[in-house]
Amino acid sequence: MRNKKTDLFNYAKEMDKFLSKIDWDLFCTFTTGYPLSLKSARRLMIRFYNRIQKSVFNNSKNVLLYWVAEQNECKDSYHLHGLIKHPNIEGYNVIDGLNNSYQIVSGAKKKKTNYRIDLDKYDKTLFGAKYLTKTQRLDGHDFDIFIGNDI
Image (tube, rainbow, N blue to C red; front, side, top):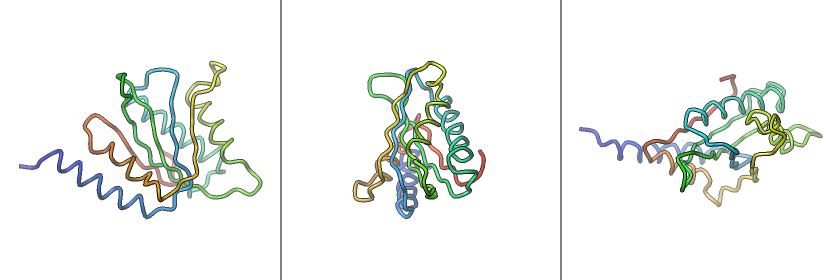
């Protein structure tokens, strides 16, 4: 009989190895001003990925987004973390483009507010991939990787 916890642990370990081989550009944290369920977290990341691929990166197929939904400690809702690899765009502020895209897809623009999005330069020595894959070891969490195509 298979052990689900062992399967999740092994899968997370292999995913960490895979993710650690990619030269990520950004480590991200996404929050909203409303409770975020797992289903709504997935929909939000799909909308975010589609928007940045088209609007920020001009339909480039070289945009990768790995994301995880992590449960808030004191609530029954979630926030998101992610890793982004993107092509460089000469003369364009990618951070502003990503931030603006998130404000649009999260609904913040409609409410004339801003939701928190932290976009930090990825540093391999801080083991961001390992931090994100730890969430995969737990039941009741969601994650995915979007690679260069519309979702």
